[in-house]
Image 1 (cartoon, helix red, strand yellow):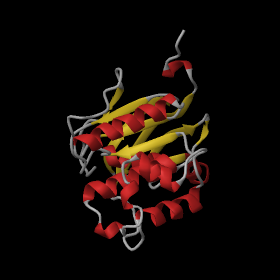
Image 2: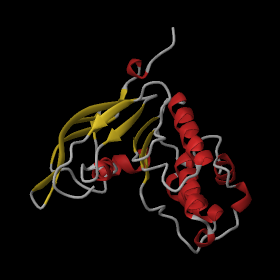
Image 3: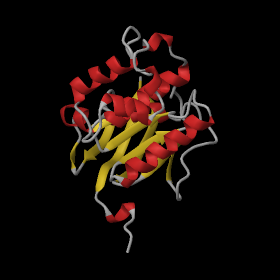
Length: 217
């Protein structure tokens, strides 16, 4: 009998998780669990706190209250960094380096997924013809693909993807969905945000709704 994500352990759990800026609530309190093999969509209008939530879960911001557990243990930045891959609005690439050099730099910091190399990661996102091109010369969509290759390369189970479909054409949107499906099938998990109409639709993905409150996303 095939397994479902809920047959697998919770990779990430949040209990009473909330964030406020200058005493103004941005989101929360939230209670949710993300299981291995699951892709979950964070939904909400501008100002609802989607980006802020991912920053909290990536360790870039400390929550105002609540508890987050990663693989059953309290989340700390020291434990989180080598176990989570974050794709933010900004590609986070060094413009003077080539696509390949950017991935080699990332691999030197975080390691490699077994069976994966910077070259194969770039090929996996359709950028194998641009390995020696400085990223400052790439289009916004091409930079997004290189950033996705960096996520693909990382030896982690948890992906946090903020607007992964932005700046991509239809083929790029299909690529993101394929990467997410393959990652889930390997036993990984992902939280994603999207304003677009092409959000991940494999099966019936769960959604975490965020209600708009005062503050920016």
